[in-house]
Length: 418
Image (cartoon, rainbow, N blue to C red):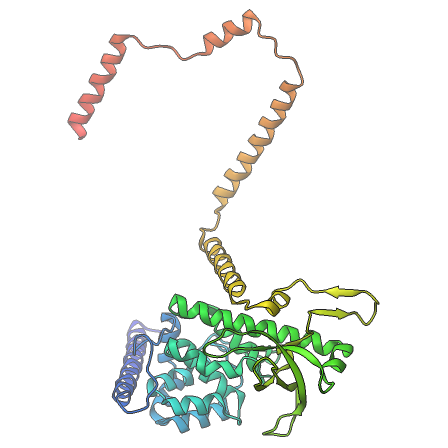
């Protein structure tokens, strides 16, 4: 290819990049005008970057598909329809390392802005789990931190499945697992996520940790037939988790009133049954999940053994009070582990020269240790001849004239070279 052809090609690339930037800036400006409307969900962070990783943002903006989205998809309904037909996974990058369809549509939705009502519809949409998934990504990147929990709370145990990774062997996950991971991590498949205000982040992570324990408890209950028979007995005395705006979530005595096996809205069989329970201490009735109930005293007789196994877990101690303090401590411990891991990740990789130096140093250390061991095995007899050798090996003292000559030489060098 001639030099002129190369120049023309380079010029065409720059023109396309400039046009892509103009399309994106126009979409951002339109979104800022729309943000003045009533009911629009406030945006957290810069209105022209949305906390995207700079490389991911640049590549997405320059994507021909994103530019097409800006030109063709002019409102929330159009974007939701496009997600329904086109999105098959939520990973940021496609297999060819280009920005994924999901993230192009996520960025388009961020430039359009959504209202509070539209966000609620997005997170509860029944047509496609990917519509919901992109809604959660919207909140994670730019949702107002003080409102995030109210949007995600009801989905932490959701069992609807979706694919996260690209490819025919893409990893499947439930909505609940996806949400818990998304809002408790700072990385999403190779791209960084924004850090929330520290107290808000800790509060959310404590609640997510509680949700993880609930999910784990539900799994173990469901695997134990004896426990399930007890729970499904009407009138059985158990303990159940309860909390409200004024009281932290903790364990209370409860009685089973009814067992729910099917979703009341769709009629589909639930993966785990739910329970309508009454709290005798207060007289209120609540519907709780399988993971939110347990044995009254935290003891269970193993089906395969006559021995009684006592749990030693925060949940047992929680029968006598709240366990939020323990959850906060676990969150802080995880934060420290994350910081330690990040420090190790950020350390400069060892060069060949450094590795050889380390190996050489280890070799000398081993030799020195061996020498010390050999010497320590023989009595140390300080003879007069050894003392004389030590005296001879000591550094030679300089005379006053020699020291004066050295000082004069240093003075001349300083005067000449500064």
